[in-house]
Image (cartoon, rainbow, N blue to C red; front, top):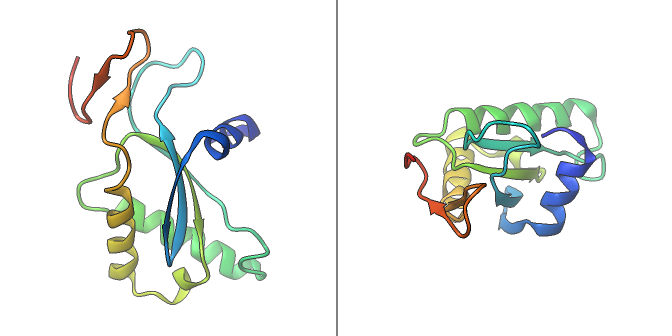
Length: 128
């Protein structure tokens, strides 16, 4: 995600999904102004200094979460999200981290609003 406006929109309107390893705030996928409709996952990973004080740990947490998201079997649902890892992300085994992400992402609303039509909804992976 880019810019404060997108992060603010997700923070204000997002659904909060919690896990012992992280917190995920999710909203429906909506393209930016002037962007073509291509449903995909756009996830911002935020690790505050308050959570992990050392930069090395913050970067490592970011890298671990990014790789776990990238290698998730089944892919990611189309959404905009902010992921806030907890300190447990550093010590958790990688398969456990992937399982936690998959479990939480399964709770993401599966239907996405499509721009242009009134109340139209399409299933993920559906074509129109």
